[in-house]
Amino acid sequence: MQDTITNEPSSQNSGEGVALIGRPVISATGLFTPTESITNEELVASFNEFVDCHNAENAEAIEAGDVEALTYSSVEFIEKASGIKARHVMTKEPILNPDIMAPRFEERSNDEQSMMCEIGVKAARQALERAGRDPKDVDAVLCAASNMERGYPAMAIEIQQALGIEGFGFDMNVACSSATFGIQTAADYVRAGNAKSVLVVSPEITSGHLNWRDRDSHFIFGDVATAVLVEDAARAPANHWEILSTKLKTVFSNNIRNNFGFLNRATPEGVGKADKLFVQEGRKVFKEVVPMVADMIIEEAKRLRMDPKTLRRLWLHQANAGMNRLISQRVLGHEANDDESPTVLDTYGNTSSAGSIIAFHLNSEDLDVGDTGLICSFGAGYSAGTVFVRKIA
Ligand code: COA
Picture 1 (tube, rainbow, N blue to C red):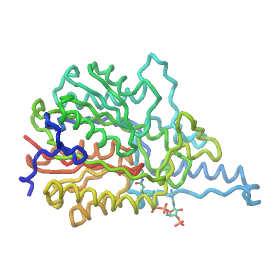
Picture 2 (cartoon, helix red, strand yellow; picture 1 turned 90 degrees about the vertical axis):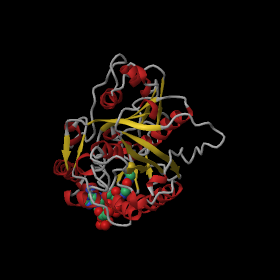
Picture 3 (cartoon, rainbow, N blue to C red; picture 1 turned 90 degrees about the horizontal axis):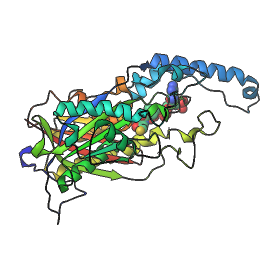
Picture 4 (tube, rainbow, N blue to C red; picture 1 turned 60 degrees about the vertical axis):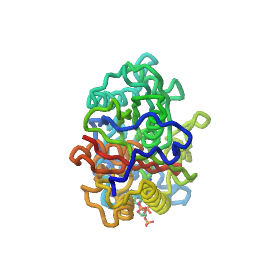
C-alpha cells in the first residue's frame, strides 16, 4: 500500500489553488539531556518526608478537621500507573529538598543567555551537525514549547542569534503538541516556498511548571530539549525522512490546565495557588484523548491511502505507557512491542512536546529505506498532531 503514497500536503492545507513549491523532509534531529536525574525512589522519599513534616506541623488542625492530612506517594503506583521510573531535571537538589520542592535557578542578567536558549541551542547544534548544515543556510527558527521563560523578546530570536542564523524566529505554544505543530508550520513554509530550512526547537523545562507537592502529578514531568530540522528535499542530506503528511487537531478542554500568565503570577508556595502550576484530571484525559488520537491517526492514514497496520514504527507522545499501549493497539490492530512503539518514558518521564521527538531521535536509525512511521503528539488544549514520515536513502 505504501507505494501509493505521494508527498501529500497537510490535510489542513490541501494545496488547492496553491502552487506547492517545496517538498518538506526531516533532515535531522538533536537532543539535549540534562545530566541530573531523579529516580522514583528518590522522589518518593522526599515527597513522603514532606508529608510527614506537613502532618506533624498541622497535627492539631488535622485532628480538628481544619486541615487535610496528606498521604504518602508510592514508587509502585507511579511505575504501574505511568511507566515512569526516572526523569532528568535541570536542578535536582532543590526539587528533592522537602523544604523547597521546586527547581531553583540563579537569576541571569539580560546579557547572559537564557536557560531555554542555552539548552535549545545544544539540541539545535546537534541537529545542524547531523545534517551537515551551516546555520547561515537556515531560514527560520521556531521555539515550540509548553511554557516560555519570558514574554519577549521571543526565545526563538535569541536561539536564532546564538546560532548565527539570518532570517526570522518566533515562539509558539500548543503545550504537549508544540513540536508537531511546529513541524507542520515549518513544513508549510517549505511547501509554500517561503523557506528551505527551518529549525523547530523544543526546550522543555517542565520542572518549573510541575507542582512537586501534588501527589497526583509530582512524578510526571522531566526536563529536556529537542530540535528538528525541517528542510526542502532538494537540499536535504542523504538519509532523511520524507514528510508524507501533517495533521493537527484541537478541542478545548479544561482537563489539563496551567493558569500561570502575565496577568496571573505563580506563587508555588501559596496555599490555594496550585492552579498556577500544572493541574489535570488524569483519568478523564486518558479516557478522552486515547480515542481522539487513535481516530485521527486512522483517518489520516486513510486519506493517505495507507493501511495504518503497515506503519513500521509509532513514535508516540510520551505521557503514559497505558495510553500508548491502547493507541497503538487501535492503530496497528495488535499490542505493539517496544520495536513498534518505543518508549522513553522510563528514563525521561513526560517531557511534554519533546517526548515523541526523543523517541524518534533515539529509535529511528535502524529502520530501512522505504519504511513508514508516525510521529504523534497529544496533550493540553486538547491538542494532537500527526506527522507521517518515510525513510529515504
Ligand atoms: N502514589 C500512590 N497512590 C496515588 C498517587 C501516588 N503518587 N497518586 C494517586 N494515587 C492514588 C489515588 O489516590 C487513587 O486512590 P483511590 O483509588 O484510593 O482513590 C488511585 O491512586 C488512582 O488514582 P488516579 O489518579 O485515578 O490514577 P490513574 O490510574 O488515573 O493514574 C495518571 C494517574 C496521571 C498516571 C494517569 O491518569 C495518566 O497518565 N493520565 C493521562 C495523563 C496525561 O497524559 N496527561 C497529559 C499531560 S501533558
